[in-house]
Length: 289
Image (cartoon, rainbow, N blue to C red):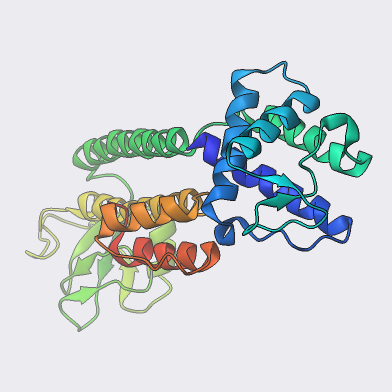
C-alpha cells in the first residue's frame, strides 16, 4: 500500500513539473493507464531497494524496462507505436528531462518512511480502543460516586402542579413529582430556582410528606445523563476520527473499505473526492463498525 501511495505522489509531482514545461499530456493518476502506473511503481521499488541509486541509474532502470517492452525513440510520445522522446542514454537527455529523475528519487526518499495507510488504520483503531477503555473507566468512577453521594448538594423542592415534571431545559433528565425534594448540584439548583415551580427546601420537622421522603436518586439520574451525553460525544468523535482516516485513502482502498465494512459497492469511475464523500456518508449513516 505504501509503494502505491509513493508512486501516486511521484506521478503528481512529475505531472506538475511537466505542466511547468508546457507539457499537459500527463493524466491524473486515476486516469493513467495501467502500464504507466506499473512503470512508476517499478521505479519506486527500485529506489527503495537501492537507496544509493543515482538519478542516472533511475533512468537506466526505466530505459531497460521500456526496451524490454519494445519501446523505441520518437520525438513525440506515442503509446500505440511505443515511441518515447526520453528513450535515450542518460547523457543524451536534455537537462529538463534529467531533472525528472532527480525529483523522482528525492520524492521517494522523502516520503518512504511515512506510515503505511494500513498502519495508520491500525493505529487509528488502537486510539479509538484506548479512548473507549478510558471512557469506561471514567464511567465506572462516575457510577461509584453516584452511589455514595446521594445526600450531597443543594436541596430543592418541586412545588409545581405538573406531575410528573421532567427537566428538558437543563438536560439533567431529572423528573419530579409535586412536593418532591432532590439534592442537586449548586449550578443546577441555581438554574431550577429561577423558575417558580421550584424552591429551596429547608427541613422543619420529621412530618415531611411521602414525596419529600422518597429515596433520592438524583445523583444516579444525573450521572446517567452525563454518561449518555458522553457516549454521544464519544460516538461523534469516533465518526470524525474515522472520516479523517477515510480522507487519506486511495480510490482502491475506498472501494474495498466501503464493501468490507458496509457492503456497499462504489463506482470506480467516480473521482477520489466523490468516493471519499460517499464513504463519509456511510460512516455518518451507519457509524463506525
